[in-house]
Length: 131
Image: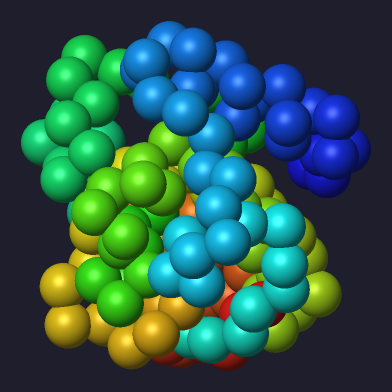
């Protein structure tokens, strides 16, 4: 499923309003903004309610996956609730919302929820290049 930029903006705005957080619009290079970045992605069990963003009792919108963001991009939780477009090695793109921190992960690394990773590659790959 592909989302238009306006749909992604609407999802981000909804998440921001629902969570009482501002969208990340910053010149700070550690803050996710509208720019293309390349790195790697892994997957884990997901942690929306108990993650570092403290989205207690929050359910991700349909078609939006969750992800943890590397601690080098954490920016004191300024990226919580931001949606990122993630393109995998198979050419498919998904939308993922930052809901948690990934301590020890490399710069720009995403630790996708377990249900998101297979959209981009087989789970047996374990780690993939993404942009």
